[in-house]
Structures are given as structure tokens and as C-alpha cells.
Amino acid sequence: MSAYEQFGGERGVKQLVEAFYDLVYADPVLLPLFPDDKERVKQHQFEFLTQLLGGPKLYTERRGGGNLAMIHRDHPISETHAGHWLGCMEQALKTVEAPEPIKRQLFHRLIMSSSNVVRVCSHHFE
Image 1 (cartoon, rainbow, N blue to C red):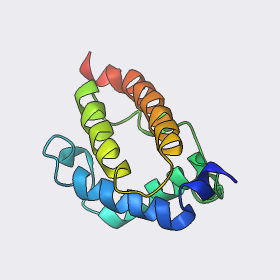
Image 2: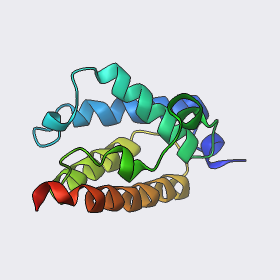
Image 3: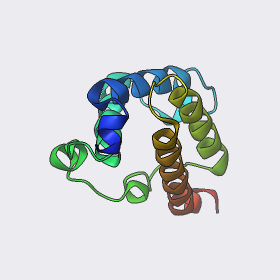
Image 4: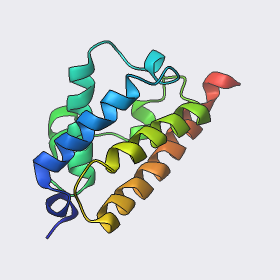
């Protein structure tokens, strides 16, 4: 069984995305980085997380894939932003009924991804 299936498939990913963006859009540090079109952002995140968990390759099929850090390169994302983002994700993961090892594995991958995004976006702060 894939990590995606163990995570609850589409239902589990949607639950995570809903909980996550409720937190993100309530965070005063993160809010300025996110567009008003919350539904579009949630759809992109759903597609990305689905693929990251080993589900259908929705993000690549619909968006053409791409390196996450390079996709965000034009945004002024700092370590503080990444910390808040990860904090929201950690809280949101607690709402999903999925095996803890799968949630930890996903969170670890997101930590690595956020680190790469911050590294690529650091030129905004030089």
C-alpha cells in the first residue's frame, strides 16, 4: 500500500489541506505571502501533496511539475516564513487520521523542501 493510500488518499490529503490553510490564512506572518484566491492555492497544494505522497501525479500533469524552490524563487520567503509554514503544517497533520510514520515521513520531506525554498529565495534579503 502506498503512502498516499495509507494517508487516506484524496480524503486524507483534502483534510490536511483544509486544516493547513485555515491556519495559514490566520497567521499574520504568512498571510502577506498568500493571494486572496485561497481556493486556487488549496488546489495547487492538494495536487502537490497528492503527488508527494505517491498518489496520482496531478501536479505534474496540470502544472508541468518543476522544482518547488524554483517555483517560489520570486517570492520573499524567509526562514521565519518557513518556520511558520512548517508550524502550520505540523498542526494540520495532527488533524489527519493516518499512521504516524507516514505523517512523520511527509513532514520530514516538507522540512527539506522548505529549506531549499528559503535557500533559493534568500537573494530577496541580501
